[in-house]
Length: 208
Image (tube, rainbow, N blue to C red; front, side, top):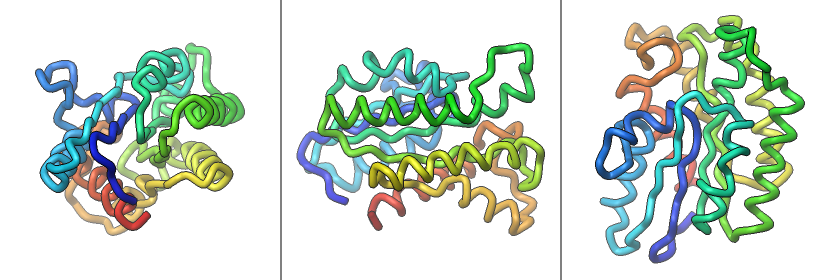
């Protein structure tokens, strides 16, 4: 993959993507999106890349749909990186009283957003696997998450999109039984978790 001069990259998702962007004067935040932003800015200064963080805490795929026109299509991006799915599963466990996004609605909505983007922009789309829920590979939440990860794989294959194996990277780390945590609460990344996300994204991009 190669960058063109003044390419615009949008990183969109939930709180894992947002991670401090609203408190940051540069609107970048302190999470994995900031590591990607800073790395690309330093590695490709001549490209003058525009890298926008459009993460919002609590978002599910249906929330992305509600703001897709404003936060993605209106910007006419050259690249769109999507990280979503954690809240679609997590809220089934934490807030069962809410209207839930089942796997069928998740897939249909995600595919709709991909189609809209391909039809209305010339953007290349990057799909990130949802990461983890609890730092135990076989937690009930992570087992439930597997089908959502599979949806992301199907969509990436169907539309020939770059797929970032962030879920696999985290599961592999958990299976190594390292005592060093990657999250603050099983979901939200600490610095090490953000580095794992960003490095997986960057490695995949430059291999792609």
